Amino acid sequence: EWKYQRKTSAISHLYLSLGTFFLSQNRDFKSRNIGLIPTKIDSIMLDLNEYPINPYQFSFPQDQIQPYHFVLSDITTPFSNYSAKAFNLAPYVQSHFYINNRWVFHSGLRYEIYQPLVINHFIDGTDTTLVQKTQKDFLFNLGSAYQFNETMKLKATYSSTIIRPDLRELSKLEYFDYYQSIFWSGNPELKRTQIHNLDLRYEWFRKGTNLFSVTTFYKNIQNPIEQTLRQGELTYVMVYELNNAKNAYNLGLELEARQQLSETGYLQNFRLYGNVMFQTSQVNDERTGITNRPLQGQSPYLINAGILYTEPQSKINLDIFYNHFGKQIVIVGSPEKFSNLYLLPRHRIDIQLSRNFGKWSAKLAIQDFLNQPYIRRQYYDMGFYQDNKFTRLATIYTLALQYRF
Image 1 (cartoon, rainbow, N blue to C red):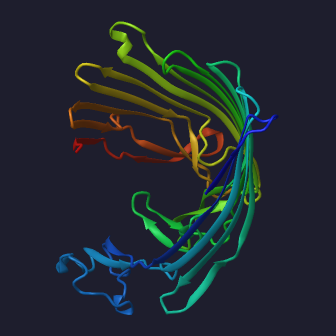
Image 2 (image 1 turned 90 degrees about the horizontal axis):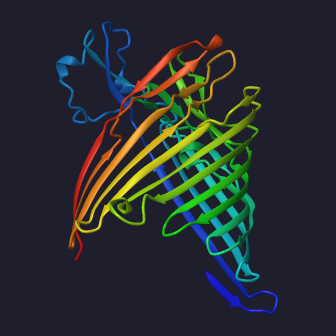
Image 3 (image 1 turned 90 degrees about the vertical axis):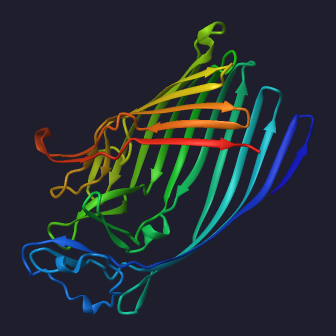
């Protein structure tokens, strides 16, 4: 990266940066999917001689690998192996113009060259090239910030960004998710997502570290990538895969605050912080013909709040953090086949207690103290639902001791 600075009569300061970004990726993935299936019949016993296996690869009791007990099932598919590589070169230029002590402009231009190559390796030894193309994009950003006084600032920004699918997602890799009892499949037809962002932010820096800000944002999204649900080759198997919708928009408002409870006394050791966001989105999905649903993964609201206590003499820190989100689509269904799968609202609390002892420090962290279940639900006509999926992970306790030399 190269930087340049200059002063002129019209511009108090000019900063110019030139640079480039380079990334090279290589992947070679091979899998063999074999497991135990409980059964009372012998009709699903598979002939594993077709695929050579190491007899010492499994530690299952041999007297249970038989009909009416458990059978070994090989669910390796023709798309279980793939190799991929990608090359990304992105030169860029950035500039900052300080008109005076109150007003600053910034701009940037980035030219991206991206070349992915994805090849599936079949069991019979043949290969098929799934993705081999060159993508070129110009990405812009333009913004301005105005300082009203020492505590108040207004920012406005436009930027264009892209989201590319992962190399694994561009393959036809198929694997079974044992937690959700579904298959996951890649999609070589995926397109990159292009986003145009507009942001307007007002910041009020109050005394000390106190802060209050308001941000409104708008995003125009072309080819958004979403998780979708489809029927597998077997009638009882569901498959999750990624697909592109035609376009979408996202509009929202975010409030953020940090506040010390008092400037004197015992309450000065407590600080409250948090943010709340409200947003709406709408998708135009040619695949399903539906144009009035929200984006997959978008919650109508999001709440983060916390309280931080710092005891200056004993150097004890206690941080309690709370998170809550609204109902969101986690998997997009298909009309007249599968309804959308929703993740219902959930409360989460994280706790962290720490103390310093000179060069030593100790920390106790409790993640997801409430351990509420993740509830996924499919709604049907008249508000009824048929499928309820409960997943309860775990509350995680971590105790760490650290020494600084």
